[in-house]
Length: 90
Image 1: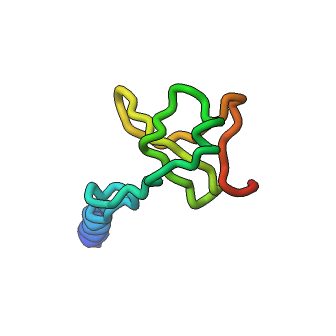
Image 2: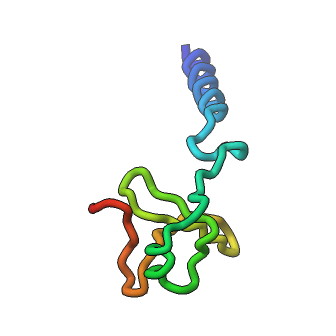
């Protein structure tokens, strides 16, 4: 009986490793904004990559791609005063 529990436990563990994590696919398209609105570029703080900007569907705020030494991640696009730039009210 204990062997069957171990076998089913291992099988469940191994099958869970086959599940694709959402967003980890390398062939998924990156929906960047083709042309960032002029109002956004005028208030955006310096040092942010405005060539790879998208709108976060959860909160409606602009995010930009930050390529760091270890990983690439999306950070909130911030105005010169430090506040995030959003397309709709929070």
